[in-house]
Image 1: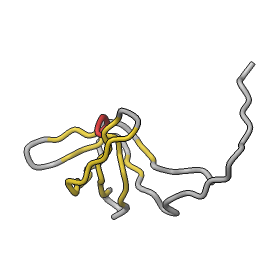
Image 2: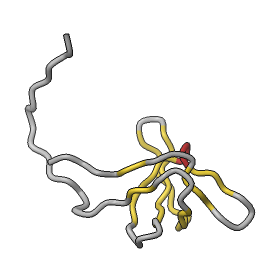
Image 3: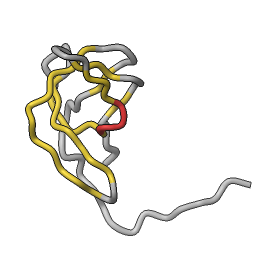
Length: 78
């Protein structure tokens, strides 16, 4: 049996059209970083021009380029 949860506080998504990347997609990093809940987050821009926070664990950097090592979406549910 799956666990059930009850919503006790309303939430409004921070971004209406968030960043989403596919495995192997090139991303551009701004240099802004943040640490939250034991994870490092990087401010990135995807190939469609969408910007947002992505976990550093999905980014692979070469000398001149950065790529997503796996798919990621910053979609939040309201």
